[in-house]
Image 1 (cartoon, rainbow, N blue to C red):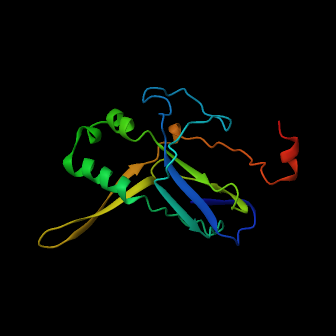
Image 2: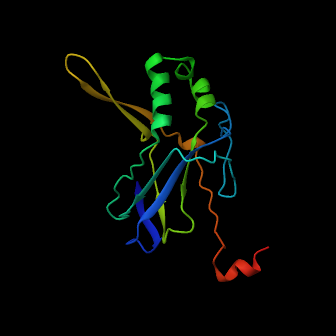
Image 3: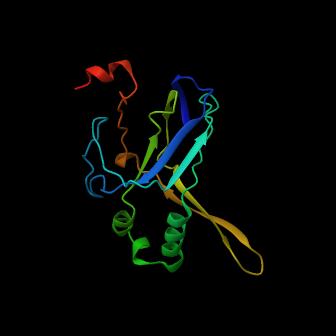
Length: 166
């Protein structure tokens, strides 16, 4: 959710894409690792979700991004079948190393600061248990603050300084 800080034109739609990381951020036992905004972790090239929305930074509304059906079906299959992927933190991290939430560097006209608490769900998976009475349920994949960092870059393409970029 936005924490209220922003720079730029907040009246324009904001574009975000979600990608799966292709490498883990450290290990489960690496408690002393620090990440900086100059750090970079590779992600897959195909987005597993995207959203175009208006962000109201002062309202601090949650930004919802629908994930791709293929990713959701695969995750649900592991949850429902209680496969090896779901049996430990280590095996789940092999399956889903993390996510990258990336803004559209050409179309967005604002920069927002987002915040999440350690207890916040980063992915909430909604499903329905079918039976005599259908029951709507959800499963949360939590956010781990120690495995998070922000990488800030500027896209110099289409700017006056593109000529001077080394």
